[in-house]
Amino acid sequence: MRHLKRNAKLGRKGDHRNAMLANMACSFIKHHRITTTLTKAKVLRPVVEKLITLGRAAIGAKKEYNVHARRQAAAKLRQQPRSLFHGTPTRKGKVVREAWRNEHDVVHILFDKIAPVFKDRMGGYTRIIRLGQRNGDSAQLAILELVELPIAPADAVPTEPATEKAATAGKA
Image (tube, rainbow, N blue to C red; front, side):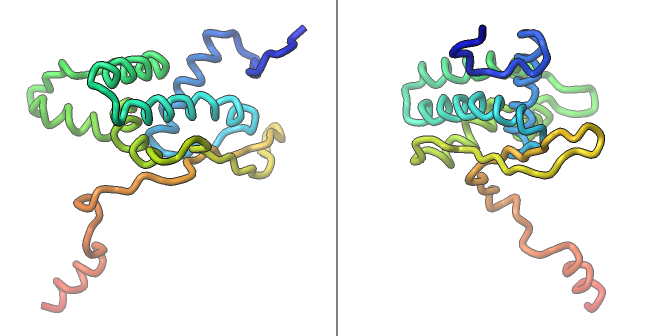
């Protein structure tokens, strides 16, 4: 009997289920939203919320706790740091490493971009929005997304759209 068992098995063995949840959590952290089945979204939600809480706790903490929390998150997400990446023959190591860190390093994104947004929020970082049924197997689809989306840095936002630049350049 499955009395007091919270998590759904999702038709998978434990290792497969944990690997799938780690991959889905990484995708969620990178893109701030994920479309999946309702059951998977309900299972993924507590995983992601605990990771965001771990990031929130590390914001004002001592350096030792911050490092420990980052290592805990990396273990849960099954991500390894690429701090020793030296680059390729055509691209310098630091440039490639920084680009990778800002776009693909989920621990960096979680702790430095997502957690500061929720530093004053005590929980409930995600929401589940139900969609219709999938055509192939009639599975109930849902979107799992962050309640508050992180704000992009000011230097990343273009001042003018590219179409207006081209139009102004053509008139001059």
